[in-house]
Image (cartoon, rainbow, N blue to C red):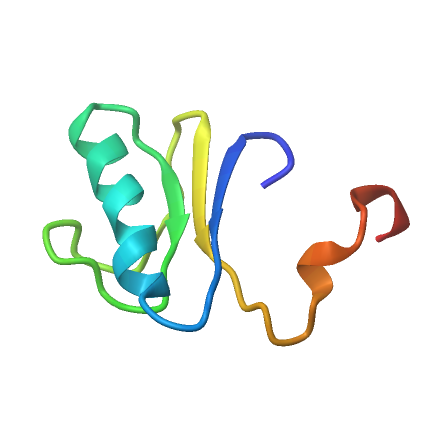
Length: 74
């Protein structure tokens, strides 16, 4: 994700639905985003795709708090 414009969706309810919206929209706009969603995305055929565009959309698991660590410490 670090070499693309990242969109991370996290929360307790609706992550898959919410993450699929920008993935679908960017795809339909011809941006060919990469995405990882925890469900198959209707209209895109799967829950994951490696695209050639400049965006990466991800459904993020907040349970282990790893998204809080600064990139430099990883």
